[in-house]
Every structure is written in C-alpha cells, then in structure tokens.
Length: 121
Image 1: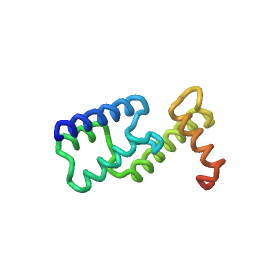
Image 2 (image 1 turned 90 degrees about the horizontal axis):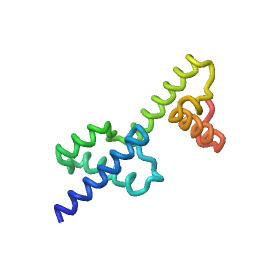
Image 3 (image 1 turned 120 degrees about the vertical axis):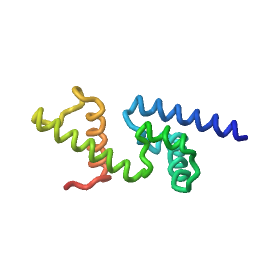
C-alpha cells in the first residue's frame, strides 16, 4: 500500500510539473478536476503536518502556493501589474497578439466582467 501511495504521489507531482511548464504556475483551475483536487489535498495535508519534508521541498521547488485563495489573489495582482506595465509601454491593453499569456488573462477578466462575476472599480 505504501509503495502504491508513493507512486501515485510521484505521478500527480509529475502532472503538476507538466502543468507548470505549460501554464507558468501551479495555480490549478477547478476545471482540471483530479489535479485540482490533488493540490487541495496537498494543502490540507501540509496544514495537518501530513507531508514529508521531501514532498514539501518538491512542491515549494515549483513555487506551489499553500493557500489557494491567497495564490489566486497573488496571480491576479501579478497579472494586473503586468498589464499596467504593458499599457505604460504600449499605450493600450490589446495584448493578445504580442503577449499570449497576458492576453488570455485579459480575455478572462473581460468575460468575467461581462458575466457580472467582477465589479467595475
């Protein structure tokens, strides 16, 4: 049973590494299902002292955030700062073609605004 558990952990961790390589962070969207749930389980285990030092070090090596809400706020603030810097340099916020990751984030914010998920400031 212990070997199976270790193998499962290594498998999910490798999925997380792949996700970070592709998306630039370990902030997993809920739509990712199993990987999202696994990350939340790691947070819970960490809070309860249920992760080994090796597992903690591996996760922190990927800049894994131990607080999901805080990580989402940090990502949002980082992207917003990136958008401000982009606008200062380019004079506009039309970033899709030149900076795809930031452009995708801007599109999500616009969609959320249209759907009433975020309020205007």
